[in-house]
Image (cartoon, rainbow, N blue to C red; front, top):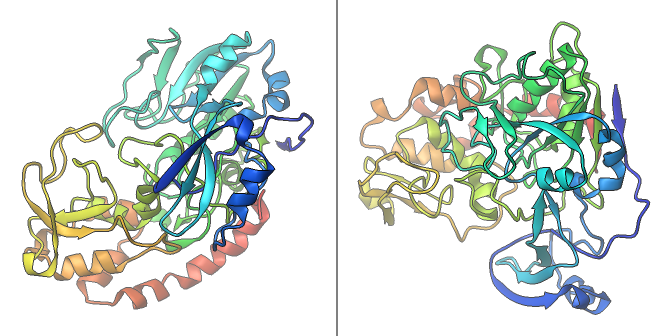
Length: 438
């Protein structure tokens, strides 16, 4: 059963949490965010969608979902991105490299804090990869514990137990899922969604999904995962960049029977207001330690392949997933060099303390496809091709063994991408049934 609550019954003070960050900025108070300011913004010609209506994430539509939580024992699946944006607020007019202008708001309250202040009975928090406060490294064990700020018990869904146990769900009447995703198959939040839905279906517990925009929803691309390569980096047979929000994805999980054994999860979705898949969306909070900004999030689908190779994708620097390099790349072929060092989100970065040669991608235009040339060229220019791939990790990220073999065989990036076309066509047709947004 799926319920989608999509009413806008109350007048909200104006705000907008949209579009591109970076570039020049001018601060204005919320009192100045009026038609004159909007007129200035929208007169700027751009290829992107510029909104004159505020984006309202699911969490901000409290009047739609608070009645569903009152007098119930609630569990939250969330992290540092599970917030309710505050307004009136301080807005900033941003102008990006592409000339796009928009408003971005930065103040917010954590969903858990807000619900507790409204006397909602939150009993526990389930934490995904990187933990409830989003500070753990990629792949780092997230342990059970207690949230220092609220005192709530925190149950890890990353590490040994990726699925809520029957015991951990005992006494829970409803589970709220609110996590900012980035629309990439190997970004593990959608795998956590799958296991939460499966556990709740098995225990007859409804799930409330507070939807958020997908910053990579403007395209679909990549190899479709093959079932024999299912892992936590890919639970379902979808392309690498899937073009759906968490809410839409949950509908697909139910509709395609992916929970197994005939299970269907009882979900209610609070959709995003004033949003389409073509809306550029700037995340005010990094969704994980190594995705610090919009550029990194946009490049992540392309550079994420390097996680299964000898190439460092910027971990151990302040430009994660905006640069890449390795000591093994031919210095005469690359004009950028850097040295990874331990930092926030990367205690043990690949090639720590070694000079890496590669590319700086911070100034390239926003991508609307996966760039495979960087991977193909890195293999060609690697000094030690036999060690280039970590086959197990690379296959888990790619969702197929074919991509590694194609690169080794010298198949061009263009030809490799053509081999994805049938899988992409079939997926796009399937996806249509589950869309909440244009």
